[in-house]
Length: 97
View 1 (spheres, rainbow, N blue to C red):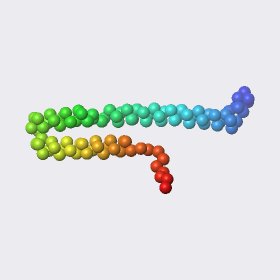
View 2: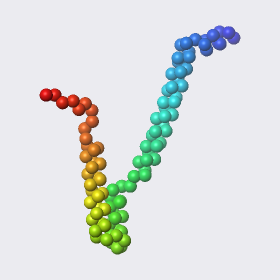
View 3: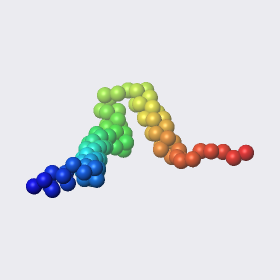
View 4: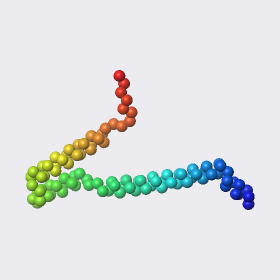
């Protein structure tokens, strides 16, 4: 019986157990982040759907021509800014002279 308790107190066993616990916590963390990212992605509205809603509101007379043009131009500016940020290259930005 003392062989088992001596084995549990060795530093190699404790290091292995610590690595196992760390791996389990890492897997749980990755799983939780993936759930959050999927949830956040579902909250986004598709741009074509938003434009269709805007056009429908304009057709019903809920918004004026000026409001329609203002919202449409702002959404276009936001989509252009977002796409230019997403297209920006990442990585090493060092320049050689």
